[in-house]
Figure 1 (cartoon, rainbow, N blue to C red):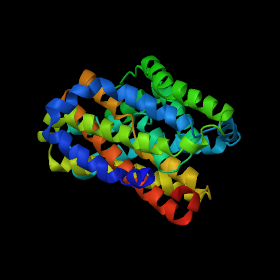
Figure 2: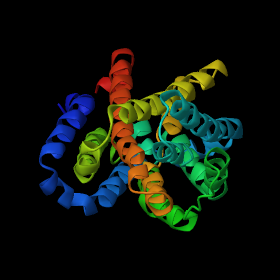
Figure 3: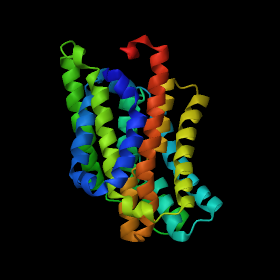
Figure 4: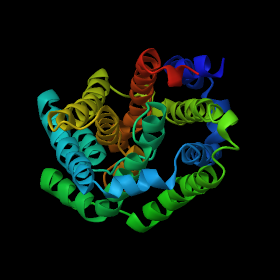
Length: 310
């Protein structure tokens, strides 16, 4: 029963997004729950890992370099190309470029987990891209927009430590030392992650309702295409280098999902509230597209791997 509910993840995400749009006043009041929800999810992810997973990642630095390189080459380049293709205004272009120049979002770790990707690799890539964002986000923003955009890397790094790394390591430690004792409840964690990410998506939709009402269709299409470009290139380029399915999924998710919250904050501070609209849309859309993709991969795996059916 739990596994069946988990597989309906994309449906729940869409349903609760619609509800959040119409009942935004009530749901937006749960804004403070976003970080605790992510923390719970990250702890649950850690409960599926062991120290061996992390050791194996650092034995393959090439894949980390590949994922990191694609993150900062594809997304800024795609943002510029799409802006030119659709003839976006300078303000809207600035918003999309800021999204493209941001590091990987922490939600990518959740989607990698739900999509049966390599969670340890996803976390490593998120941390790596965030650490280098202090230099690369202003650099690529300047190259494309001719304006330097400072990044609060210290605050970002501390947030990732608190929301991602600490709970994941805590869960990993418990799983490593008490693996046999928690075996019977292991399948509960994907369900809890599903509930948490659906609630997070709903809260994001509710908080951005007023902005969504003022946005042009062309901006929505541009944002969707930007995300699709990252997911597609991030998945198929590693395929060309003969990496396994889990790694391809993880890099695809990591490249396609950005720290859109950072891009919104930078847009408001250095450009205008209007420039934050692409980031606000991206924050909703990449969670929906990632949820759908994770749900499809999980369904696909359940048909080929009898272990996942349980």
